[in-house]
Image 1: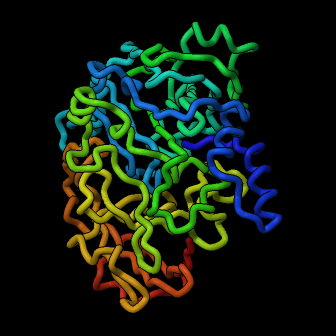
Image 2: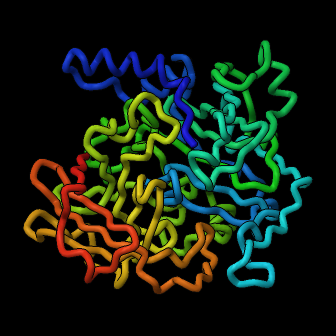
Image 3: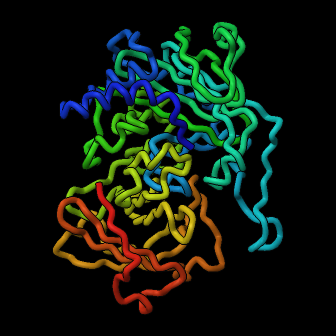
Length: 407
């Protein structure tokens, strides 16, 4: 779940540039203002001395690019599954269609450490919205304490960890007034690589590494992210910032077994079906009115975060909720479908891999759950319609309910 309060000052900087019809502020400057209050120092290079969970505490690493529920477009952070939580969602108790077994020991607590030298520059305690986070995204745990920590490693490189249950006392004693649910707190507290910065329990938590010297080439329109998650085009594969022998040891923990081991998030192909799309009138990537469920207008037709051969159709509002599907027959390839190909029909199946790579056993795995039609239009537009509960033979063309998406 993304939080947005701390973007406001930085957004004002960007908006002024856009209003003057000038190029937006360089992203490094934007990150510097948002997170480091203009005080960044050091040019790098930055090399990670560890990942935020110690090697022996890692049960599994879920790479970038996971599309799951509210993460309708490929997620821009990796997930750490502590060793005591690797059974989360595994197996079923007796009845193959019954509730999933959950063997986690919630009393188990793990240290979260700084991945390199730097400064803690911002802390936020995300409050639960009315009804809880799961009201908007059922994959999110409702946490009484839900903390995010940003660390500046150089004038170009930052990292963050999200969903901590506490920040270390040595850091908190340097935070005047502490941290309360809601507005973020800017600080500048030096930390060393390997220093404990907080704690997590037996639940998945997020980690991202951002390097503004690197820009992903697979986003057609970078401006989509200026009003929410402006770091997204600069999220890097953290395995590339770790030296051997630790790098190989960490790769063994990754659920993805093909390069890039840290995953990928940018699948836009200009003039083609593949990649991210946003329903017209829904505010693009950022959504409208700072909605918590900003993803309702999102659509991604991309590839599985673990097996890049698998096509995934990820819809922000499918029959009233965000949903993800595999494509029956796994064809045609969306990266190859353009304007001349006309209307494309995909029959939808439930996916067969969990986010951590374990097979999901379903009695209806081969049953078509619905159909989508897609037609690439000129000027970076897409006509799209979903038909929940229908089979391919039942869908013969678009109806008046079809929507237009853009990039």
